[in-house]
Image (tube, rainbow, N blue to C red):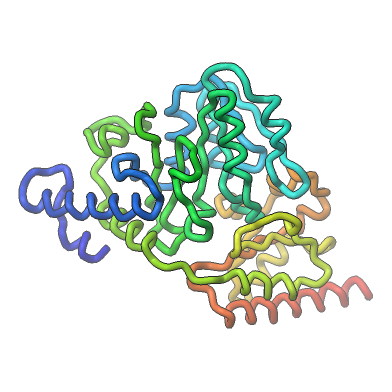
Length: 341
């Protein structure tokens, strides 16, 4: 990123500085393409995963959008804003898409199915291969929001078989404010932004060269094995309900609740002890409200209102987990004492 900032040229200019900037952008695109298993020209750099999701759902020619009931708010809001007919695919009690329900909803021309690779609140992994196979039977397009899963699961565009794929840098230790939409070769997607001819005329605006370089560098980094740290966290959660525990989840995400313990109080107490956790989606955790994900899973309000999400970062350590466990045991002991009083 420092090299890119020092280069200083506009990647769309033809002078020497512009050509140097263009080479950095091209090299970064090739590196990210290698990490994602796609062709470099399939990648459109965006300002965020949210922008990429909006571009996919609003830019593809489709009459109907089928989105899972547990999608990220950026997908749900983009679908609503698209002006297209939107239907929500139900999930089971573990938060996994109901494939039988999806089959009943498919049919008819110009359908786009949007299902995330892994849930941002619970970490539950969706059966994307089965969803893609089912959509293909009916000639439907498939968009996968892989922001939460990228860097924690193998994400290969070619092997997933989808038509559109969203990723973002900050989930893999890269810079905030840079995402990408992978578009299958030959698929037309209308741009959200109009102006210059950047990104093969798919996204106008001078490229954020430093962030693009940082995204590619982070995507190329070897991931640390953190599943054992998640297991250590879960083993400390006495009295807790762990959502999605019966199905495959991301190795870094734990969403849990203890009936009677309010999420808002827990957030403040964890924060006072130097532990950053959230309730629901980080995009809306400024206000602690009931999670639409847990609601779709059929979780009772008195339990979902206590839900906390713990996410291990790309650089989390055993010492971090031990600190969390110490704080949690203190909060749980305090809760038990109040109940006993």
